[in-house]
Image: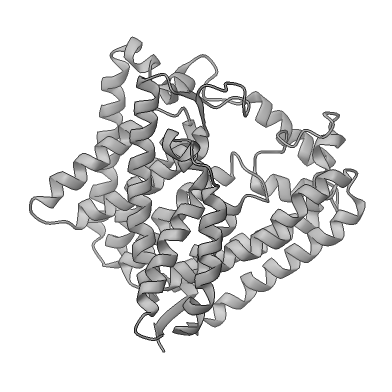
Length: 401
C-alpha cells in the first residue's frame, strides 16, 4: 500500500478537480449530454480513495490548525441550532445538509488533496486542463449557437446553459496556475505557457462573468508575485505585478478601440454597458440582510421569506459573510470570521514554513473562489468549503508512512 499511495493520491487529485469544477464542466456540450452525473461519479471515486489516502501517508499537523477547525465545528453546530427558528422548513431541509454535511466533507477532501504532494500536483495539472477545455468549449458553443449564457435552468431546451460564474472561475484558476508555469519555465516552454495564458485571458471574456475577469487579473498578478516574495525576490514580484497591470490595461484598451467587437464579448458588454459596474439588486439584498440579522439571525433559508419573496432560494444575499450574518445573526458572523479569518491567519503564519511554489499554487486555486464568495454563492456552496480545506492544508504535511 505504501508503494501505491502516490498513485492513489494522484487519482484523488484528478477526481477532486472534476468534483470541484463540475459546474463548469456541465456548461460544455460534451459533459452536459452525458447520461450520468459527473459530480456523483467524482465524489464516489474520492470516497473510495479516501481511506487509502489517509492510511497511506504519515500526517504532520500544525497546532495552528486547531482554532479554525474548532470554529468550523461551532459554526456548523450553531446552524443546526438556528434551524429550529427558521421560518422556512423546506429551506432548512434543502440547505442545512449542504452546510453541515457536505461542508465538512468538502473541507476534509480539500485539506487532504492540498496536503498530499502527489494529489496537489495532479489536481493543479487537471485544473489547467479543465479551464482550457471549458474556455475552448464555450467559444465553440457560442460560434455554433449551441450554448446560452446564464438564464433559467431548462429555459432553452435546445442549447446548453452556461453557468457563467463558475465557468469563468475555472478559467481564472487555470490562468493563475499557467502564470506560475510561465514565470518558472525556461527555453521554448516560455512562449507556450504565455500563449496559453493569453488564450485563457481571452476565454474569460466569453462567458459574461464580470467577477471572473477581476479574478483572473488578480490571480495572474499575485500568484507568481507571492512565490517570488517568499524566495526573497521582491523586485521580480513588483515588476511582474506592474507588467500584468500594464499588459492587461493595454489589452483591454485595444479591445475597446473596436466597440462593436467588444460588445460581442459578453463579459465586456456586461461590464461597460450603462450601470454595468454596479448591481443594485445585490446592494438591496445586502441592505435588507443587515437590517434583518439581529443577534441570532433568521435561521437557514430564512432570508427569502423575510423579505417577502416567498421560497425563492435564488434571492440569497450573494455574499458569504452577509449570508452568515442574516442566517446566523451576530453570533453566526463572529463564527464565520473565526473560521475564514482563522484560516487566513494560519496561511500567513505558515508561509515561511512551506515551499514557495506550494503556497503560490494554493493561492492560485483559492483566491478566485474567495472573490466569488464575496459577490455570489451561499453558505452551502461546496466549492467554498473545498477551497477552505485547500487553505488549511498549509498546516498539514504528508509524508511517506
